[in-house]
Amino acid sequence: MPLPRAHLPGVTLRSRLLALILAPLALAACEHAAPGSVQAPTDVGPFTATLPRRLTFFALNDRTPSVSGGVIAYGRQGAAYADTFYSPNGKEGCLAFLPVDGGTIERLFCPHSLLSPADTFVNTWFEPSLSPDGTRIAFTWQRGPNVGPLGISDADLVVTPADRPTATPDVRVVVDYAEAGYIPRRATHAGRITWLDGGRLRFLATWEYIFMVRGGGAGRVTDTLFVPLALQDLDVATGVISDVPGGDSVIAYAPAPSGGVWVVREPHPDSLLLLDPVSGARTPVGAFSSQVLDLIAVDGAPVAVVSPVVETGPISGLTVFHGGSTIERLDPVSGARTQLTGFTGPVRHIAAAGRGRLVAEIEQATLPFGAPADLWLLEIP
Image: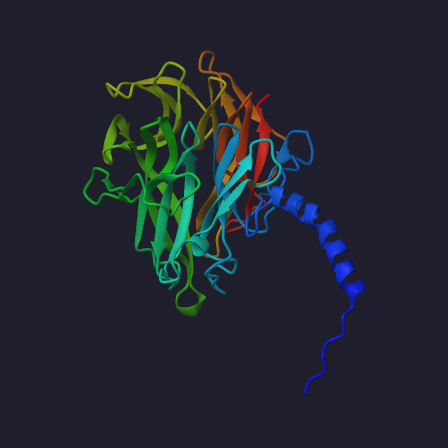
């Protein structure tokens, strides 16, 4: 039979005193964060105020930036679904948000952590573009089985809430554009997506060209080029895609102050034209020093990535384009060109960031199959 427990009044008194001391502290803690809540990290700001300024320091890829309302939306390579040969660092694509001046990432959405485990596909989110009010995001959603680089099954242009990319989309459409000709190339992707206003998108209908560049069997290596074929618009409310008059063969575009569109077309990839998107009329404006890979408008002037870096691949005579080595500003009145310097590495994409600045996707080195890319903040002289 157990003995009765001794009465210890000192212990009881100490327990009550301790409870009285800790109670206000517990209430103060609850004011900061409720149990189970998640607090966003405090923005530490950019590490320097100088320009050019490196904005991201990720070991993998940061690509396809766009800027809206002081926020950069871009595609960040995820580590999910890593493949030891084709893509050792993962094939997933995530959506990231960063202040345009740099600092702490505000949000990061990755498909593998948001989709049901029953979804065994590799999901790649890229080419994001925030709406003018920042509440919605348009991006290309590509998915395919995890069986290698040729396993892509579909790619959709979607518009979702900016904070819930897996929510029921406002619109989800398939890009299907076939160019003229006997054996036409067919575009299935939306590239360089921009918002015309709160209800309309403009984008480049893009052909995804996957090709083998070395050998066969276990030693085969593939590369991918995204080749723009035409300029198209999307009505978000109806989901209807329409060709922009005069937008055939457009490989780069940017809004012009006149209300028209600056475009560069495939037949003459160094020539800048002013396109009337209503009539389709195209008027010559000037010329860049060489082929244009990407085009934006900075403070009312066209700025382009030009002069592609060319490398010799594993097969003799193979030419691989990795990006531009120069960023140029073209004066639309005089035709004078100004080149931006102070950066190294191939440039693939650029985005206007206001006040004479731009965000550039710059690869860390020039390699036959490309190198990981970071985002930089640059300034036009």
